[in-house]
Amino acid sequence: MRRALIVLLVAACDPQKAEWGLDAIRTLATPPDDPALGCGALIPTDGQAGARARCAFASGARSADTLGGGGRAFPIRHIIVVMKENRSFDQLLALLHDRGQPGTDAIPPGYVNPDAHGVPVAPTHATTTCWAWDPGHQADSVRASLDGGKMDGFVRNAADTTGTDGHFAAAYYDDGDLPFYYFLAKTFALDDRHFAPIATGTFANRNFMLFGTHAGVVDTGIAYAPPSTPSIFHLLMNAGFTWGAYTDDAPFSSALDWASDDPGVHTLAELYDALDHGTLPNVVFVDGQEDVEDDHPTADLQRGEAWLKTIYDHVVASPEWPRLAMIWTYDEVGGFADHVAPPGGACAPDPTREPFAGLGPRVPLVVISPWAKRNYVSHVVEDHTAITRFIEAVFDLPALTGRDANSTALFDLFDFSCGRDLSVPAAPPAGTGGCK
Image 1 (cartoon, rainbow, N blue to C red):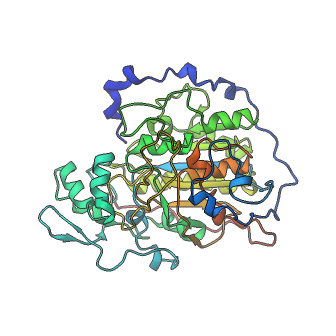
Image 2 (cartoon, rainbow, N blue to C red; image 1 turned 60 degrees about the horizontal axis):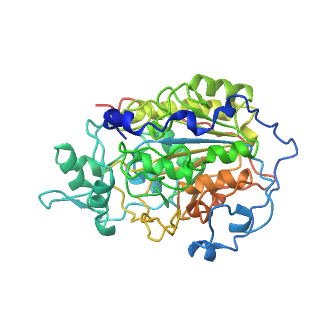
Image 3 (cartoon, rainbow, N blue to C red; image 1 turned 180 degrees about the vertical axis):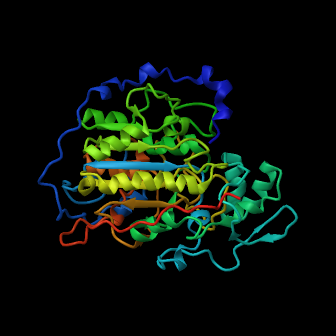
């Protein structure tokens, strides 16, 4: 995402913030956590996988009906979603298979991207953690990068959109560059088949998490979701639960055109205070400063890593840690190479009028929680609406669209059984010295 793209369009596309209908969040109180919630909750046996594969469920469906089993008593009352910007799984975690998580899919031998001259470019260790270039990553660029599922167009796309040879788009980082990111991915629960919901840029992919659909938005900077779009914000508030957006910049990386004075928007200092004092809303969305902490090029990845480490330190020390799950992921790959082709057949939000059903390239997703499976990797295919469905499952909310109705709910990443080690592992500091 580049905010500069939308400067001239704000006046034409302003969603008239007063019409969002979210002012009540300023005074809505977070309900007390149920002290009876603890270990022993059972994740239901999934008896509806076939029906979901057929996209049988529609908006309004409850997770108890779409994922099997009855009511939920999960010991999670607070969910933090940290969605960063524009990095692929392979770029950030290419060596995880050999650095503590052998269950993770590794880059296969022989995977290359030909450059503009037909020279094969293999993945190589990045020489810097702060690239000076931002490869194209809107719909046309993503389609070119996917190259019909061959996943070999990233270098050519980077060359076409940055004026370089594009080779940097195939570079990766190791655990010496990003020790804290590697720690999270191998210590807690990782999904190595998590894909962006749609093959385009920031706005549409973030919309899928918030609305279960791209809400009429395809490429970033052309339009915003209409304020009347049913959202996870409205679902939570209607059920008596709270939410908050925490950032020292534009909330949701500008995807909603919100500002710091909009309902529900808070600073990072307020996030730390809420964690430290046990006053966190039920669902929290956290964003870093653009091009500084959010990992969007030209940001220094190590500075973004240190930013996430600070949040993590407050999370694990919080009195709400026993009832908390933090999700760390990326909205889309930002034009950086990944070798895994997105599967086809994603359920359309509205099958009667929805032309976009294909997933975008793969991004990291890690769940950090005392209830996350330790040193675990899942291969369950999902997209950002699995986050939406997880929120809906925990708080017993109806689905927004057909996409989240037929999504998994991240259940494969959790274990609520009794007798597990719930201690907090010691984390390494973020990397330094990589911005050359």
